[in-house]
Image (cartoon, rainbow, N blue to C red; front, side, top):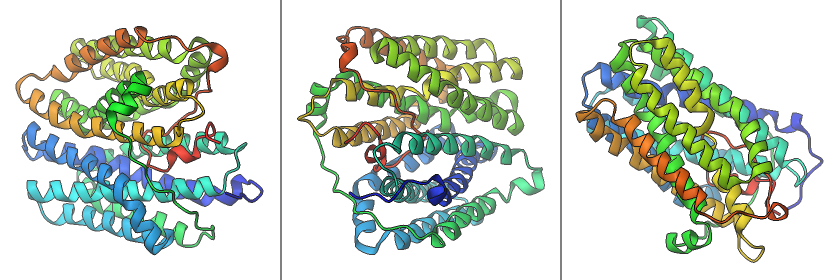
Length: 406
């Protein structure tokens, strides 16, 4: 693939489009659960509706590339964005739990299709030497925009009912930016599917870490707002909690990456899992204070968002040159999506019977991961790759943007 002379300015419209998408994505993702809870919908139904979003994202990772290849990037971007806008607006007009599940499914399908398009464009405009900085800017933009999107929940009661319309406007802003951007359309490579047993035999810790990372992050976005709203009966507390936790995730990316480069992924995955288990339990004792809950959220954010990037780095460390690391990375992303899909389904059931079950589950999963990671072989220092920052949500083209790929 040939690349023009790299310039951040040349691809700045893509980052601006990402910012608008992430603003709408972050705001609506949290608001859907909060809105349903305020209407008295059961936790189990909320879990199913939210899981539908990730089911759509899984399907998108498998078939959206065919759509993009057949009609082109700009038309596909407009198509996927239109599907998102229609889904958002139908949320505002109709309320039916089954309908909302289908709308969330189409939103997830469209959103991850949009990410694939933007990531492929970023890859097209990036050289091997510049991919690290491009991916870092992508991650920072996505984290900040998703975090800032939470503040829209604090609009007054009269305005909050228009959040679906506001989300639609933000998505349409990204369409305007992309439509006015002149970028060569890149070729998308087909997604070669690997069997999970085969991938697990090659990179067991990476697969396990990716799957559990999906459960943790999926649970955070879908069911944590429900718990916070139930405890404090305040949408404002929910928005600040989500904002602070995401800021914790953004702040910790660089130091955790440096630590993993120095001490190895196995140890950092293990210690991060121990830390996540500890911070999860703290929530049980913070329910009486919103300030303590904010603090617990920040601690939780320090580690849960790094688990997937650490797992991908582990795969890069242990896979030999004869294996296609891009396809393995895509499969890890698919595994992460499966975990994100299952998380709200399981937590929706558990929260129906025990309000602290989310923290007990997080504790048990992370204790398992901590000891499991330590049981794996250490990678020699000279065989290690480097840690690469990744956004809190990404499409199937992100592995091609990874600077560790040749």
